[in-house]
Image (cartoon, rainbow, N blue to C red; front, side):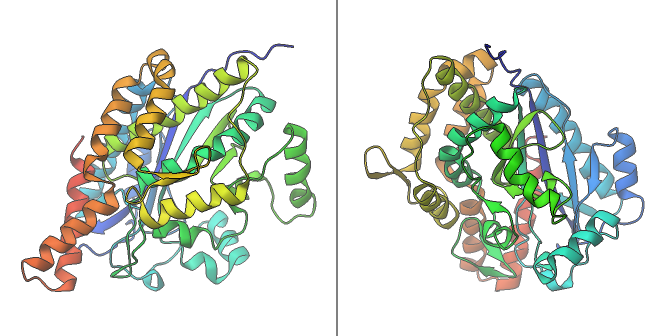
Length: 377
């Protein structure tokens, strides 16, 4: 039986950190802030694991234009409501200098259970990410596309990297967030599954044993959503600039459609061993856009700008069909000055070169992140 063409709808989730506008330190969400945001945004804002975090989620968007309108309203409202408490949101995966040991998790049953289950590992979760949902209504097709899409995950991470600093130190990584997140169980690249029933049987083992209550506690870089008929990409650092988020979301949507298009022609993206894809994943979190990724077909390390050009060429037909060609080309242009990790380091070095001390230079980085949050609003 032929599989119906997927909807390829889009939903975007982002996590933000709240900072004090005077000191640039992390700040816990005051009583009423989340409620005010949720009331203004029909419940699309919620607390996250740590009290200094907030999470937003767009509605089901038919195209990138709808996603832009929704995300802009969400980001703007969170910033407006936070400002009433002398706070500002920053869309970054790690705060440049705050200490995770000083943070508290949100007093909510779900998060209390999580803290008990994960122990000390949970306390270090001072990280934020960005997730993209693409509507793929057929269960089996979601698994087939997930198997193929694994290859592209390191490319997305490299483009999104925004966490070079941790507790006031330059980690020399582009995405320190990933090293923190990988301490949790059930993270990293998803396994390869032969079918939807294979996926259900495998994950059901943990559910039947009472280890997890459902697949929301499986935190792979890419997974079938538990709540929606979507394939959820979770590998990306959160992007300070809204347009960067939209460019990445457009790329996810286009690559998903391209791989479905291949399947409709009885073709598929070549499957590579998880060991090899993991090497590219490491290169992405270590270097971001700086050192390129391995092309396993040519056995070469290819610079990121060339890889992105090739990827955009591959999905040109899909971008035109989905109405997001402009976002993809803007993503290519935007990478000329590197990722957010590169820009943060540039701000830090500039402050140090001007004679500011380390603490002041790190505060300059936070000020830069506040500005970047607002640049596209």
